[in-house]
Length: 63
Image (cartoon, rainbow, N blue to C red):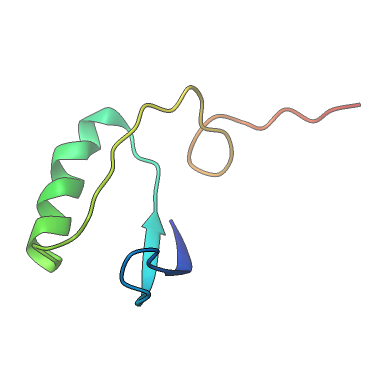
């Protein structure tokens, strides 16, 4: 999970964007948690081709 400070292009308000990658079976739980914590949250869900690194596939070392 990463937190990015951003400024809204329309409102000019400072906000925090939370970016996370989850496995598909975890998506329903994530949406339920977000809705509970912030019913007005703006959420985008996209398909990721591949996730590498801690908790996901191993990042291959290059020569």
